[in-house]
Image (cartoon, rainbow, N blue to C red; front, top):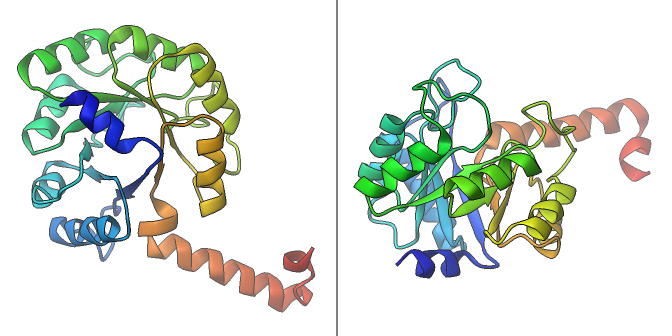
Length: 235
């Protein structure tokens, strides 16, 4: 089953369907509807935040990558074993969690978290990493998939304008685990570039499922056009 899921993702698009607290779309059924729309468009998997959203999308015929963002600690993506278990029990076939080398709130190591989770529940684990050292440590800890999700957010690497292609190449060269390119995939061109850099699959979220941000991109372009006659956007 695990190998089947990983093979399903090969060369495909994962769509992250999330809304921030207080936003109009911050509702489990709304997120599930967006996830279903993404699947119709060809998504090989979806990424959902929180047990309620994951449970609302149990009927999807593609793998669900589940996370649970919680707490104010630097480690907020599925930060503890209890969070990971809740995500898996809600219906996720892949549990994504903070895959950095930072201390976790419950005091467990990443290896202990993965070992205890997979001993209890038949589920895959994706490690959201911020650097090559994170990815190699996560591989040693037993993660099945390595994501570039936190590249540029942990202080180890600069925050690139688009997906961190260099990090993808570095991980692919040193690890046998499939790499999921995630983080600042703003366009189809970014997604294709990530795949060409060696990614097993590509995860895009904001550019597809966050209309507030997408609208802002268009408004910014029009504001520039109004202020400088479009010179900036034609150059």
